[in-house]
Amino acid sequence: MTRSPIASATTPTVAGVDDRYQHVCKKISKRLIGFLFACFVLSFLDRINIGFAGLTMMGDLGLTGTQFGLASTFFYVAYIACGIPSNMALSRIGARRWIGSLMIAWGLASTCTLFATDATSLYLLRILVGVTEAGFLPGVLLYLTFWFPSAYRARANALFMIAMPFTAGFSAALSGLILGLDGIWGLKGWQWLFLLEGLPSVLMGCVVFGYLDDRPQQAKWLDGEEQALLQRALQADRAACTATATQPARSVWRELASPRILLFCLVYFCLVNTLAMIAVWTPLIVKSFNSASSNQAIGFLAAIPQICTIVLMIVWGLHSDRTRERRWHLVLPMLMAAAGWVLTALSSYPAVQLLGVCMAASGSYSAMSIFWTTPDQVLSFSARAVGIAVINAMGNIGSAVNPLVVGWLKDLTSSFSAGFAYAALLLVLGALLALRLPIAPPEPGR
Image 1 (cartoon, rainbow, N blue to C red):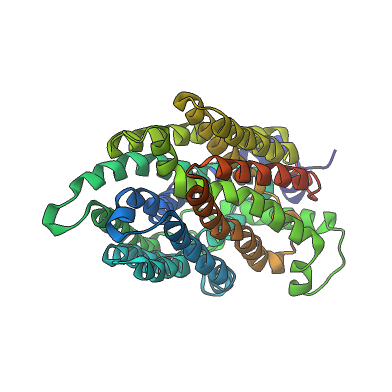
Image 2 (spheres, one colour):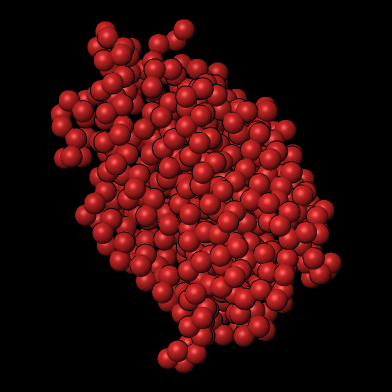
């Protein structure tokens, strides 16, 4: 059996090394994951709050379903275009300064969405939010590779990424209540939504400058022995990835154009379609079950799928690390999510439809946390910053396409069922493609 990278890189007693490594990883998790989780909550909140704003914004601004979906499409077009240069900037400038600057910028842009007066102004403002928010998720995914070797990363990713369902659930309840502020100080409820959910990102961005460290060797909260242990583990992990690579040395851009990277992009594209559908359309989907429901009731009902998602993401990520298995931990939740959309489309009972949305949400987000443990296995260290951004950007074409397609299908059929079928079909295709991904199990010992 292959020895753990940390075991081979340090002292002879594997158990002792693993115990010390576990202590360091727990210390890093306590310091970084909770803080990055809070930042991601604000990021995702400013991305998805337009879904709840749409409950009243569409009528106030006279938007059709297609126009409303197009606003999200423009957001993701800007997001895709700026993700790669943003990650390149992070690798040069450092996470502390770059992430802090991004948070301040997107917080201001999201807040300014309250000034939208028609479809055109909404499009422009959502483009601005997409430009400024583009670098956060791929940037943090890259940042985590600087601190956690691959064998620990599924649980780290899961603990960080539960910010997405947590925010969706928290936002569902919070946004429903904020919409009730309609008319106070002359502002519409959706205007209050962008104001109260945008400004906290500006404040957190200021905190980032004083809290994050770019690399372990700069972390004063780790002692010298802990820094050395972690650095040796990361170097050994990097060497293990290089040793398992089958491709010859090549330029970064030729490496990124390889069929294997294209396959990762296609799988993520199929998966992201469902993630976008959940983020943008869940409030309107839940409302379609019972059009007489109040905004507050819709908010609390829309939180249920997110609670299920948080539980499954944590359990699934931990199970993947413990069993050292990635492929089926990626494929099975994608198929579960597809089954959820089919169930929602075929049933006419609201409780069963809600169960289907729960399956779709928990399956797709759990698959995403596992997916992001795998691309660095086929990326050289020099290509990792750009590679992660490329996969994220190309996959997020699904985020740009989905709102437009689903909005058009809803206008065409007066139902979300066709959109559910579209998302389910892509998930099945993505699961089949995932079976061909060049995924190796992480090294044992953690």
